[in-house]
Length: 589
Image (cartoon, rainbow, N blue to C red):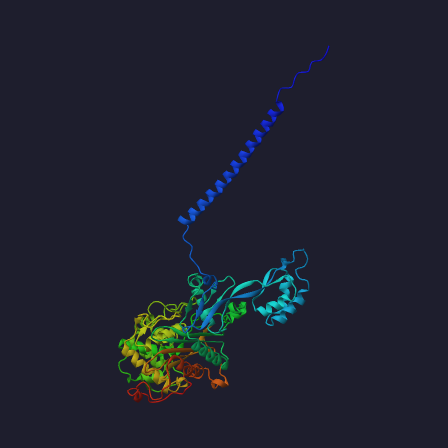
């Protein structure tokens, strides 16, 4: 029997081919759909982004190519546009141990050899310290400011770990000039200490970067002040010095200097801090501002302020009245002068001879409460008014002053203030009686603050005569620059210490104004702990060391400020000359 084979279905291969094609078409359609969906999502995201930018996000500030090239920190200039601080691109020297990523040592040669090579390029670097940094193997700056030609020499060393990144650097083209006014910019890009700190937000503002911030100072006056203070400090081996030139009508600071100075281009750790041993010895770091931040008992420079308060309050109406010149006992203490001036003295002689005894009797005439009120109106109870962040707190006694306290304050002891306090008070005394805050911002003509009236105009006019008499007949003769009609008062105060005042350490100050027939500027010069040297005829008092500084300074700055010497002009002293019977020795304090 023959086997029967079932027939194959007709067209079965074609059916499978159709199924395969149908599935492939379905997959293709799904892929196209997915791609279309992806494009749709991208388009939707783009539309949402555009809508957010157009509706929610504020419109971007349009900036030109010039704006993009501006430095990241604004410029500071003096009142005449002379640059004091500016930013510029520079190289830095950075040690990067990770530059050699092969696991080997970061340097090809020994650290000592590299340190010696860098020392030959930068002679001011400490080779031993540099070697220690390289051997420590930690990433660190080796130098923050590198010139292009020096950068090329570093590259020639062939050490990959010595990198030279481009950074924006702050440069002070005048060097140490006005360092205590400007301060400096730290590694974090923010200002420290001076106007760099005060103006930090403004200088970093994108809207301000193309503009210069003009200060009130004049670099010509600033340079002369620093030069004369430095010369005077070194001549008598003083530990420090301070000075200020102030416009009496506006409160603008034309110059402000503190010694020793520092270089804001190269601020060292020793510029900012002192050791514990140095601190125990009363030393301060160079960055410390003696004009605005350190308080002193400024001695006899307070006597004209006391006399002005007595005249203004009506306690003193007759300058010819005679007071006892003999020592007086008050609350168990003896008030005396450096030498007996005479049995009796009048007001002009009290100032010319710098009499503590006479000043104490004038205080008795007006009472302690009146003197305290005038000192408060002159701002002696508050921190000095100026933009700088470092401003010292006066040592001021609250409550009603006792008689002895008022006496000592009257002749410059009992309260401690900054030289800036004294400058502002003298400005009010000579400008017609208006006290104004000191400022380092340039003031446009007509925009001076109103201030507050402390003295009558008549009181100010009388004090201008008396200050001029001190320079002509009294202890300020070494400051009497010919033709500039200088007036002022010396002050030599013993510094306080453990157990009382230290008789061997003085603060010598001369407070002056010029020209006294129409006062324009106040000048303060102060020396901290001057020594008797051949330059001061072996004297330590202000008449021999601080007054000569002012006497040399005023002829230098007067013509720059529009005040020319005139031997034919002076303030009228006719009514006061007959009251002066004896002239003092120049060395009186």
